[in-house]
Amino acid sequence: MKVLKFGGTSVGSAQRMREVADLVTGSDRKIVVLSAMSGTTNSLVEIANYLYKKNYDGANEVINRLERGYLDTVAQLFKKEEFKHKGLELVKSHFDYVKSFTKDVFTVFEEKSVLAQGELLTTALFNFFLQENGHNSVLLPALDFMRTNKNNEPDTVYIRENLERIMSEFEDTHLFITQGYICRNAFGEVDNLQRGGSDYTASLIGAALEVEEIQIWTDIDGMHNNDPRFVENTTSIAEISFDEAAELAYFGAKILHPTSVLPAKLANVPVKVLNTMDPKAVGTTISSSQHKDRITAVAAKDGITAIKIKSGRMLLAFGFLRKVFEIFESYKTPIDMITTSEVGVSVTIDNNRHLEEILDDLRKFSTVEVDYDQVIVCVVGDLVAENKGYANRIFEALKEIPIRMISYGGSEHNISLLVDAKDKKDALQALSAKLF
Ligand SMILES: Nc1ncnc2c1ncn2[C@@H]1O[C@H](COP(=O)(O)OP(=O)(O)O)[C@@H](O)[C@H]1O
Ligand SMILES: N[C@@H](CC(=O)OP(=O)(O)O)C(=O)O
Image (cartoon, rainbow, N blue to C red; front, side, top):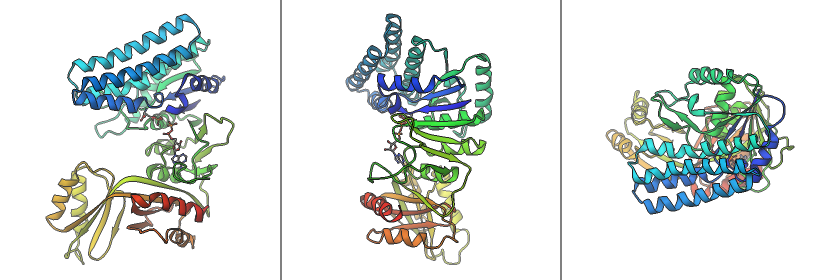
């Protein structure tokens, strides 16, 4: 069995859905994970923001625009009156539900339910389309098996047991369709796996069922060696290890959700990144094979804040780092990069929600400087100490760019550098020019 995930752009129109149907209707057994049609989740976020502010005119305007888009898709997707009717009813019921919140209380619980409508609607439409064309597909409700625990981590035992239970009722079925991104939390409430989380859904399902392969179908021919939104002439990486792919995803390669590689890695299920617009392209295979003597790729993670913490008493003091880390831990704020010296320590975070409280606590025993709007540029490859010369090439490439922090040695696959956001594009381009 294989798991195939199609992102929002891959199911972004009636024509694209037809192309996806061609790709999934072979004879082998598959679970197809779909995201919402492109733009849907952004619109739902916009609607939720209006509903929080009780701006019902604003909410209705976006709701109506989104609904018209889905009605157009129904008109173009289905041929038979019966299915056109089913499609229209389906769209109406989902949008009536969203509209009901323009008259009701709106809290984080309702927001999560609103955000779930995109995937629920897209998968149901796609499943109708398969049925109209005579395919015997079954819709697997993600809300019946995808669940997180009290730490907001996937509850892997629950996921496996419930997937197996539901699927055992359909032993003769070869094609299952399910929603990416959405789940229930430990309290059984509708929740999600964070933006872009459909990749994570695919990886969790693939790992739970120990499938032969997970395929991530998107709008580009695999993982590229640099961010194609900022650098021209990037090329697809044919093969990459789980570890390198995880570093790239974590450090900003938008093509994969940051946490999506780990479940596949733990279950040792290979992941292929493939292009819906060019299905014959080789794409990228992510597996446990390591690739020696190369720099593989560059990525950049935006929205970073750097905090420089200085203390006259750090010199020869023990316990200083513990005090610093405990503060970040108490506000559940993860640290990305860290560098130390005799007089202080610099750390970066990507979540400023508790920044003011963190700074207040740090100021009780240190002086603190903050740099906003920073970017972590991450170079991934076989960067073991024995491979001499790679660091030199990286710094040579970046000689015109102010570098605020450098992290090397934390993993054998990564050198991370902190630069100002305004220098990001130049840094990425300079690295591509020198390294590839
Ligand atoms: N290293 C990279 N390799 C390939 N694509 C990348 C990379 N970094 C960023 N991207 C961007 O990621 C996009 C695909 O991700 P996304 O839009 O989330 O797809 P989907 O809607 O299929 O989930 C590509 O179109 C590309 O612009
Ligand atoms: N629809 C969700 C989940 C997702 O993964 O989308 P995509 O595969 O299009 O990045 C989002 O926009 O966040």
